Image 1 (cartoon, helix red, strand yellow):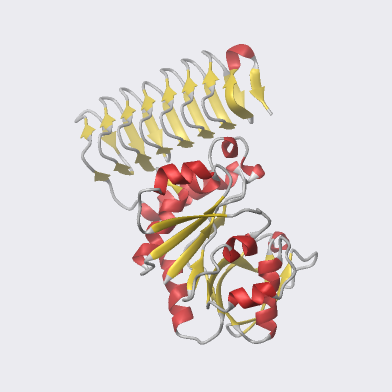
Image 2 (cartoon, helix red, strand yellow):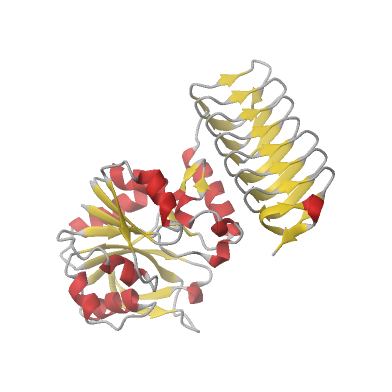
Length: 366
C-alpha cells in the first residue's frame, strides 16, 4: 500500500505560525504533525509515502530528504487536493490519501484500510460526525454506502461529513481526468463514483481534527496527549528527586527536570529541554530544546528552542519557535509568532503576534 499526503497549500487561517512553517511541520505533542501520520501509516503496512509540497517546500527537503521511504513531489499549481493527487498519477496500486493538515489516529486508519480490503468498491472514505457540517462535504448514506456528497450545503441533511481521508483504487486518475479542474474537483470525482455505487465509508472511532486555525492546532495537541500519554515515560533524561510528576508525562532524551518542578496532568517534554527549577507544567507540550525556569505553564504548546524566564505565567497559548518571554510577563489566550521577543512585565491577553514581534518596539499584531 502507498500513501499520498498533500502538504502544498499555505493555510492562511493558521497565521502567524504559517509564516514560518508549513502546517504539516507544525509540532503536535513534540513532533511534526505529518510525522505522526507517517508513523500511523507505517504501522498499518504502508511502505511508500509521497509528500506533495509547494509552500516552504525546502523545509520538507531538509526534514525528509535523506529518507528512502519518503518521496517529495512538487505540486506546480496549488489549486486543490485533486491536483495534489494527480501529481502522483504514476501510482498503479491502491493508495491512501491523508491530508497534511489533519491529525487522525492509527486505529482509525487501520479500520479504514480493513474496510477497503474487504470490499470491491473504487473508493473507501473516512467519515465523522461534525457539529457544524455546513463547513464540510456532507455525506448521504445508505447502510455503509455513500450515495451522494453535498459540499458545504446551507441546510445539511445530517451531521455526517467527509474527512477527506480516502483509500483509492488507481482508476481514480481516470475519473479525475473527466472532472472539471477546480478546488472541489476531487469531491466531484468521488461524488460521481458514489452515484455509480462505488463508494464505501467507515466512521471515526477515536479522533480526526482538521487543523485550520491556531485554536485547532492547540486542540490537536491536547487531544493527541490525552490519547497517547497513559503513563509516565522517562527516557534518557535527568529528573531531580526533588521534582514531582503528579500526572502522566513523556520526558524525552536529554531533557532535564530540575528541583522544585511540578508536572501535572498530561504533559510532553521534548528532547534537550531544561525545565526548572521551581516551575509548574500543567497539561502542556514543551517541544525540543526549550528552557523554562521559575515559571508557570498551563494548557499550552511551546514550539522548539523557546525560552521562558522567571516569574512568568503562560496559559491557553501557543508560543512560536525561538521566542523569548522575559521575566514578569503574563500571556493568556494568545498566539505568538516565531522568534518573538516579549519584554519584561508585559500582560498579553487574546492577541496574535506576527513573527519577529518585539514588545519593546511595539511591533506586535497583524
